[in-house]
Image: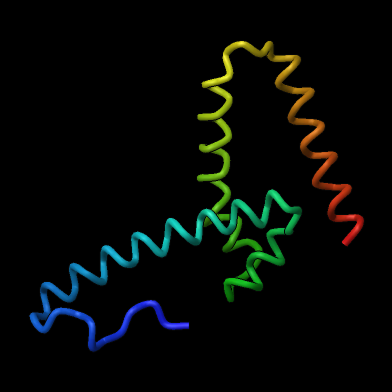
Length: 104
């Protein structure tokens, strides 16, 4: 699957570079969303790394921080939960992921 056709780029090299940079930003956002979806469905960092053509460690280093930041932002918005309630939810989420992994 090709997302960008060289023929579709502007003829002016600097304009083409700008278009490529915007496309890369969109692609990076899509990649982050798919990594998050893969993790939510129980995929391991090793599986994600393999799908991306990189090591487990490289995948974790590249994508885990954003996942933690997203979780922290969500937690910050949930001020109506006590710390104990939030911990219970987090523990249940981990258990659900482990159950999904065990079934596959």
